[in-house]
Length: 264
Image 1 (tube, rainbow, N blue to C red):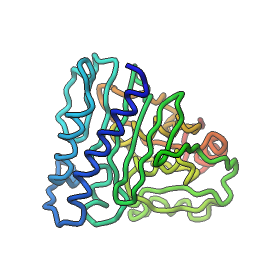
Image 2: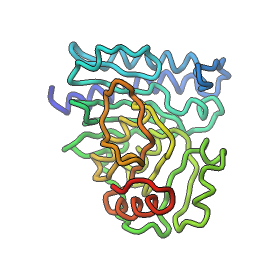
Image 3: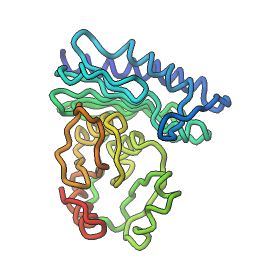
Image 4: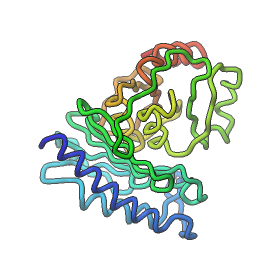
């Protein structure tokens, strides 16, 4: 299937799912807790249903936070890896830092992706070899090569737990933000220099954002130095580091010294 067809499919699905979510934003939805304590709402499920209806074609696999995992995906060459509402905590709290996240994985590699934050009116779509567009305009990862005064996005939850206190004296500026997919979209758009999380994440959290950062000329790797592969039997990654290609060496060196992370 031509890659532009994939991007058109992603764009249509983002529009429909985003419309579903924004109509329910700040409406006092009932919240329940999944096993493990993460919140989920009716909006998560409605968005998931729309994405599953619009994205896969015959032969495509499916991996979503809100769908029971089907091992049949492991035999598919193309797999849609989605989070129908990344940042449910922020969605419930009325904070405009959540998004729909759609990633397309081929042979274990994220090759196309899109995120949409309807609360801020931002849509970022891109693919390997085709670049990235934000609201229809071409964008690229930032060109900063040093950490001094760099903008680094941190998980709002991690900041609240004190996990970023270790970086208080660092030379970069830290901005707390919800939704890891949204943060990766901002890095891909050149609106932030880097983001990282040193705690495990699921593939659906980061597949789209990884595709976008790479397509925008950035780099993505794990804190353990593990090869970044998707559609694995256990869809869980040991954290994630993303930066512009120019900043990646400095970010890798800093994290290797400060927390023992593997260099890029």
